Image 1 (tube, one colour):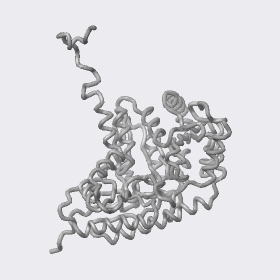
Image 2 (image 1 turned 90 degrees about the vertical axis):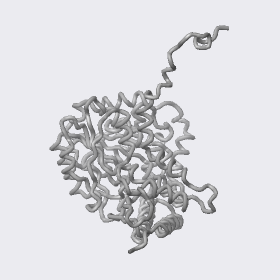
Image 3 (image 1 turned 180 degrees about the vertical axis):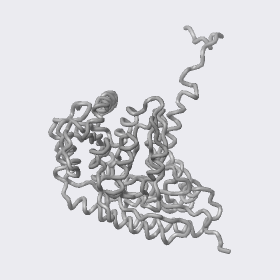
Image 4 (image 1 turned 60 degrees about the vertical axis):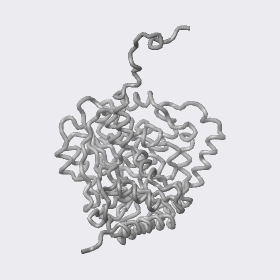
Length: 429
């Protein structure tokens, strides 16, 4: 039997797959994900400790029994499965009844009517982001991203060789976008700016006035807006949720969203891209064709979930949504109040939407804590509490806390954080 060249004393080229540089962009992008950072924090937990781990760093509320999808949504999925009409492949852009239902759902909040042809179904909002970043990633182009922001955008731009430029969100102004920095960052190669409203990670909800200013700024710069509205309608403060699409007569808007958060089913992986294009600018640029072409070479959301969507939207009662908003409002109030009691952490803005709050670490009050990652790892080791380091979101020496959980667990976690800060407090002179 013949051996390989090396075994026979000959020489051969190194295996190409072993070259370290081959996967470098993917490895770098993957290391920036929230999951990767939280895994690092989790690794600091003392597994032999007597207390359960309390995770208030991720964005999955389904770990708490009080955050459950509506019965109507579950029944719609069962009915779709038992109908045996949704066992095959779906069209790449999504099944027609689901696209029509989502167009009607989004149009409730708009001064015009979206059509089914404006909607493209995706495997969750994450795939919607993937699609948009991929089709915009032309050589030499750049995109404007909020800081702090959802790190998937930065990961995807890095992997796609699309330059990201970060504009600041201003804590003392309710995390509004710094539009002066937007104008300073944009140039002729800027293809879009991203707005996340209601905000992950800030818990803010933008006013009509601020959204109008964003639209006018984008129009002035000649760039489209990608409106990440995955937390649409999860607004429980003084400001209602207003979709960016109402300004589509001023600027082209691509809205990305999903049923994941409002219906509390992140694992069902049903998202969408909606083109809000009253002036036909996106279609003239053939963005619709690019979206369809990219979706043609990617995976589709599960067909039976698509089949259930019309009934999920039609049958879910308003009192279900009000119940969830009340739960979020109460837990946000608890979180904000407990942070105010804790020396070494400050919260510049009370959360008004989504499921998160950003809190700033005052390291001058904490003895021996080097930065936000050090804080989170020590907290995990000493108190078995997991929070997300702000550096994962572009905000060094901040932390993100998720308050979408049952009140006793949240209160327990926040009390442990308070104890941790007291134990590490510097003695006052």
